[in-house]
Length: 253
Image (cartoon, rainbow, N blue to C red; front, side, top):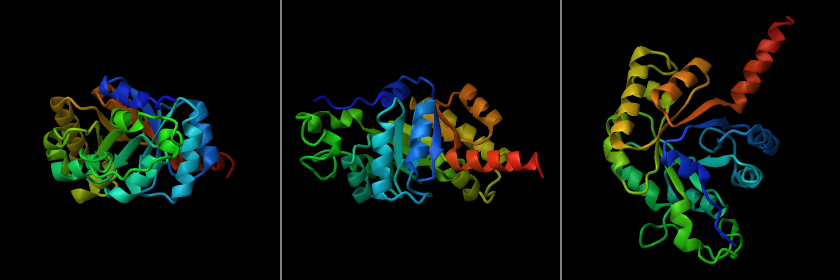
């Protein structure tokens, strides 16, 4: 059998627009609904959501049955969880809070087999279709997409160095932690926060690496796409349900 092709990786490396969504509800039915709708990519969040390893596996199995690319945001930049998620068949990994090129290299190495990295070898698991993809170990690197989150002023300034690390496929700017890093937590529309986001995008363009971002504001999402972000998450499942329910109730009370 053939290794699964990572179409999302292919497209962002060509700077083709990809629209995604954050999935935080740890629910396989929600994952299926988002996949049916047709988002290009769906983040399965393990950092700020109650997703455990078994729940991630089920969501991977569901999403990969559709055209959407599941991107697993691991809880932290550490190799054990990365190894387990990759063995379960994830091919796109989002690493939170990467500050410099040293941390970016550690992220890449956790996705690579020796001698290029430190990923442990499992002979038969979901990632190689239970041993039926005979050349998986030779081709795995080409299909694994490594995205690192730059979520502080320091990280934004270090994007050129981070982007230069071989194996980093994309930069993702995290507005929430970015706002907190300059003492303006939650003030996403603040001029200084937006200025840092713009600087991050500019650094990505200069480094010729695709940039991504998340926002729940439709106007900002359209702006980010127009500005040149390659992959944009336009909301989260949690926020969609909460705000829709809230607005619906207001019409009757």
